Image 1: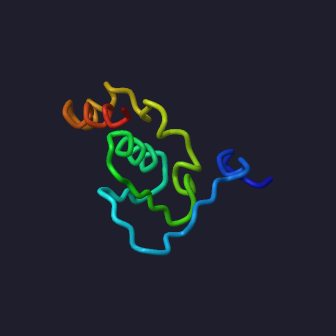
Image 2: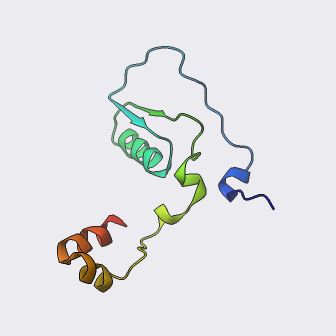
Image 3: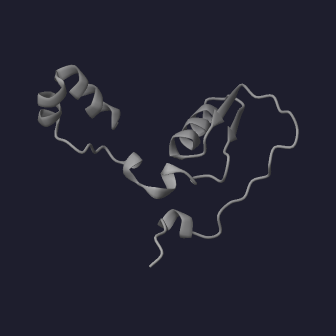
Length: 98
């Protein structure tokens, strides 16, 4: 059995041209995972000129292998995190999921 993410099995995958000349933008977002794509989208919606730069193809890294970045879930409960790391670190870890 071949292991493959459903994201990688979706066809057709969009193909974008390789940058072939210098461009001027206000912001360059490096990485075409969910965080990079959403950051570029939000900046463009806010009126900035944006270039999204990805080494391989959109979603080819961690985003393509998991949906964990789209959920508000941690491996531990908030009380367990607080017992192990203290209140401030526990709260930061818990809130990082948001």
